[in-house]
Image 1 (cartoon, rainbow, N blue to C red):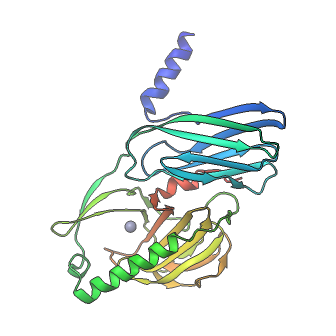
Image 2 (cartoon, protein in one colour; image 1 turned 180 degrees about the vertical axis):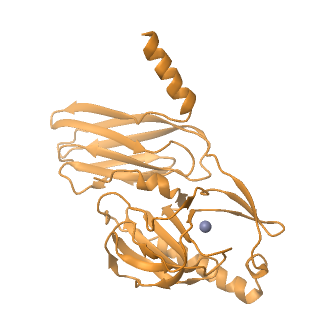
Length: 296
Ligand SMILES: [Zn+2]
């Protein structure tokens, strides 16, 4: 007994933020229903996967932070899921997640979970870039506004079903800077938040699609240079920036692992690298919280 207590104390000492995934099962006249969670951490900027294993139902949905979510098929029989993006701005504390399943005969079952969200740990950095990126001219400012509108339109049209196949993969295999969520001050005063991670690949390295999906955007943008956005469905998009060359076309379906472009240093950069990001509806998500999920 003493040994077990010591081991448990050590786990909390070394992994103070680690909270075990929540799970619950209920027996119904139709069979057993199980709701499971999967995540890297329950903290700001992370992705959570909620899975449902259930006999045939007429409707299965959930509610979290004022938003409704529908379960979609995972491709496996009787298995469904949806994704929650914990934004960088989500308030730390306990948040309610409610799941409701309705059957064709009118029977209803519900689950309630208390989800403890902790504050993310983000660095602070000072950077120097070309002045045109911190003080754009009126013409450049107009271009930036148009591009913001364009990307918002892309994110407002997620596919209603899941387009991915299995786990997400790294788009390149080089050294990763763990700088997601970093607070940045450019030159003298311009504040920004780093909404992805930087991978230090030499210019010209092939970039692969992290998962299957549809190319939602492939064009040159002011800040992110040559950019590709892939729509993976149900609100999740992957983003690849500063490419020297783009080899994907808007509207094209892409397979996981396919080469979509080559790394470079276009846009607001201090040197060649791949900026890799994810967006879940309107929330930016840490890429490493996506690649660790199973999606099987
Ligand atoms: Zn970056």
